[in-house]
Length: 374
Image (cartoon, rainbow, N blue to C red; front, top):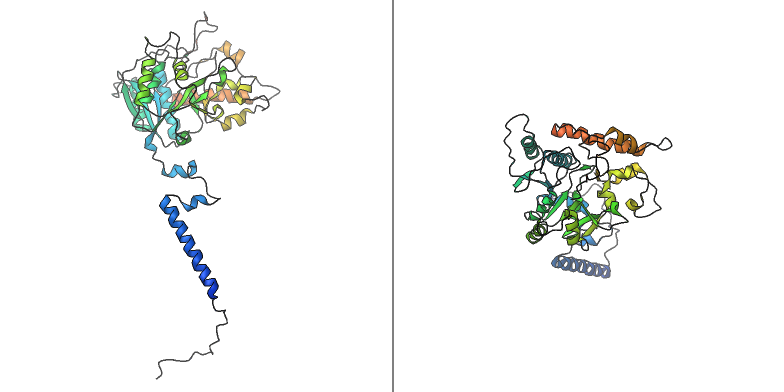
């Protein structure tokens, strides 16, 4: 029996054109050229993918977020009183709820501890909550304890404690935030900015009388040398009588700091009461849209003189006279302003189990009361 059976249909000749020898040689040259090019790019450490026009830049945050070692970055808070400890824990709660990936650090007086001795031991309860609920690293330090006095700022005697952020050399970058804020979006993107010793915002509220940087948000690279310099400059026998932490920071970094956009990170609550927004915008032609402004902001700083801070009740006479008013049935400024304060007070009650402090006397008996500018 034959080992080969003929096909049931006759074979047809292959009509495809035979390869062109010249074309084949050119193709081999093209392949060799591509191989050599890729080899050279690999040797020099460049990815050929980065040369394609549709690729994002290598340093784009959208690409970097997946591979960032977030343990190298930290949000920094400090507290020297119960009111500001609550504020700090509220900041960490917001960061946790909004999905921030960076580490969190809280510096507090070494006189405090995490042993909850009774149901009214609020400081210990809040420290434990920060540690266990929001994964905060607790750092006791030799800093003063101040007492809440129901005034605008219970930390007036300790504005320089924020300088301890420079001593956190276990981190590549630290972000200090004032705690009297509402966080609308986490700001992890700031950690991925180009390297710089310090980044701050303009104090647009001081314009045009004074051009300076604001200290309510400071992105910094920890440095033992800078920490020592700031500690020396803040000593009572070294600083000027009326110096604030902001004054010292402006002397150190006023001409060299990277300037961050205050529209995103430094919106003041008082802007919703203001009539003139030229210094917020930096021009005179943009129109004020309070809803758009709030959507574009990541943080709102509660700065509303003569109104007290949001954990203190408003005097009724002050509120009636100076709160935002509706204009031609447009109540957006008033509604946003009221909701910012209402939300803060509700979260304070939920997170800290603390009610608002009583309203201060209004009008005050004298004009010597000042806000802390630290």
